[in-house]
Amino acid sequence: QVQLVESGGGLVQAGGSLRLSCAASGSIFSFNAMDWYRQAPGNQRELVAAITSGGSTNYADSVKGRFTISRDNAKNTVYLQMNSLKPEDTAVYYCKANVKRYYSPVNEYYWGQGTQVTVSS
Image 1 (cartoon, rainbow, N blue to C red):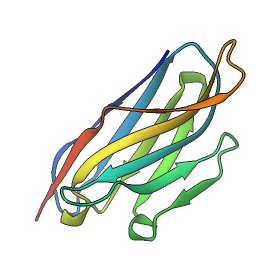
Image 2: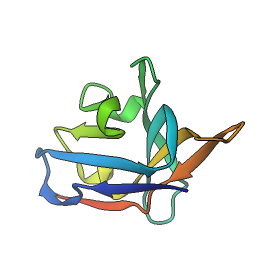
Image 3: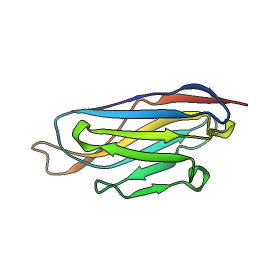
């Protein structure tokens, strides 16, 4: 099995910064695309940022220029640096990873449990 554990959420004032981490553990052969999603109360889960195994990135328009996704392949960890936070960034943030496990013929998706980010005005 594979586990994803997020950390780094919390309460911050508008204009502040947070850095989220998502560490994967388990029987991982290769660690492919990794994404950060968020879900605010009453809203659908939305893609915030994505990074491929090669390091190419993609961002939602609402966070471009403020958020940065990165990864450390040696640590099987993906990060989300969030700057200039706004109250509308308040949500539960989830990481999702595309992973190939040892002895598995297919790639699989795994989700973390989520971490709360609250931005006060």
